[in-house]
Length: 422
Image (cartoon, rainbow, N blue to C red):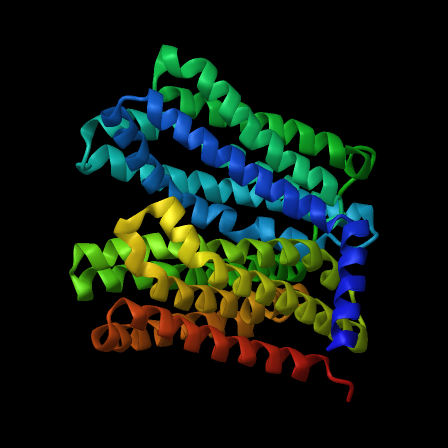
């Protein structure tokens, strides 16, 4: 155990030196700023107008989910080489065809909004005003992915802070003049700031380099990688949505539904830690060629992740009863048990499953990820259904523990099999 702890401490020291904590702290600060911004806007915006904005945001959230058909993610795999001309060629390809995809997606959605009735007629103007934002959003994500591929982690963290900070400042300045429209203006201004900053960072890599056309074979590999990763991510993100859907529709008890939602708020944040680790490691694994090196680095990263997540989980379980009383009050005193189960479930996902799920596409294995994500989503839905029918909201957490653990083991076995020395 002492040897394991010593290795974990050394690995953490390496991460600190190489920029991982810029990602973690930058992401945390961005979340705090965004949370504070949402609170302030809710206080100053008319509730009806805020509902219209929320309705438009809900529609556009589906567009952001499939933005550019995943070509921004493909940048992380295909732009890690040392050939600047090739990297710029992929970057140009992603921007060109990703933005064309956005034209089709956004145009289709706005046509539907124009032709068919919507729940809130007054929300149409918000949808029209936000019509150009997906194009800026996709451009920013591509440039940020290119920055990550170049291991510019500090600048990547700054970009996130600049964006959320600009949204907060601009929305507060304009909210008293134009109400909920201030959020739309703030988003446009902040995303332009991010694009300008990001381009300034990557300019030395692309400005004085000509780009060429990539071959059809390269183009299809690039597109296939992005779409495979996109579909896998969509099905992974659907799993917690399914949980809430089944709890609401099977239990049909407002108290139980509220308990489940509140108990989930803090434990689900633990996945942010593993997401930060994955953001850091993805380009590094994409650069690796030797199986032994990949497996050794995977094993180290996996043990580190398990060590950190286990510590956070244990701490969360210990402080949960006190935290519930202080933050939520006595009306939620009965959620301690379900919160503990949810700590374990989300820790299984963050500590075992998420990392290999990100390593495999980084080293080129996207098909298994795609099949596993779809299969896990379907199996999870079935197990969730019967568990909730049998044990109520506790069944949702138990189903999550089982599925996250088993699929995590499957990911690690497949990764080991693909990297073992033959």
